[in-house]
Image (cartoon, rainbow, N blue to C red; front, side, top):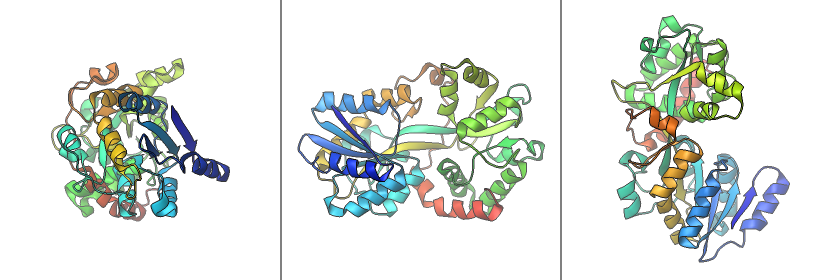
Length: 342
């Protein structure tokens, strides 16, 4: 059985506290999760079936969860915090949410780039920040890198989310790591100059903008596109058919990837169960659930993926350690502010 609670309104906060406050036992693990995917229930159920450890889940956004853990202090029932994007993991780390752990399983199963240097958090699924193009307006040979989004030919033709979006902050953080802050700022200014519209909406809205002809190019995480392809709505599938996807920088460092990740909370009352849960997330079974449930890329090699992901074949991923994305986040935010990226 999976116990769920959600942080949203004050009433929900109170209910969540009562749902998890007493959940400190040898056969339980308490997850504070900023992932809101129904498919994650399959992960929790599979873990319980394998280990007999019951899973209790408190859902909220990352900032809510961090604030709650800090407020609860050493009395917090939280064992594991789960979130998406290295920037959010880094923020939680900076606020003292995680403890470092050692695990031979995680060291063996996860690539170096997916592990915090001190074992404070780990990446268990990958999200490629891809470029999407209008099939009728763009020959994909015209663009092959993030850097080329600033080319004059794309003036007024690029759709991308706002600067407060963590996915864009991490993309810029990766450019800082590879090129330095000065060149990264020039890139951000170039993208602003080429925007087809002021940033608005989420990743799916950027893809829809390409399909409608409002822009020729967009930047979005790959799985939003796969969701459209798999949608029950024919209109969504038509949007996807009008749009092509390409993975940038294949001749260089590779495509920027971000993570869904987790770490053991500093005062975890069920520490051993928490480590066991993280180790389970690196198992073949859990990796397949990540790949099929939300169309994310597994971090472990050789895992079966959704047929659409399989059809794309292998592509080169940037192997920058994800901790650097967090470390460069503050500078990325400052750059966005300086160039007027709303």
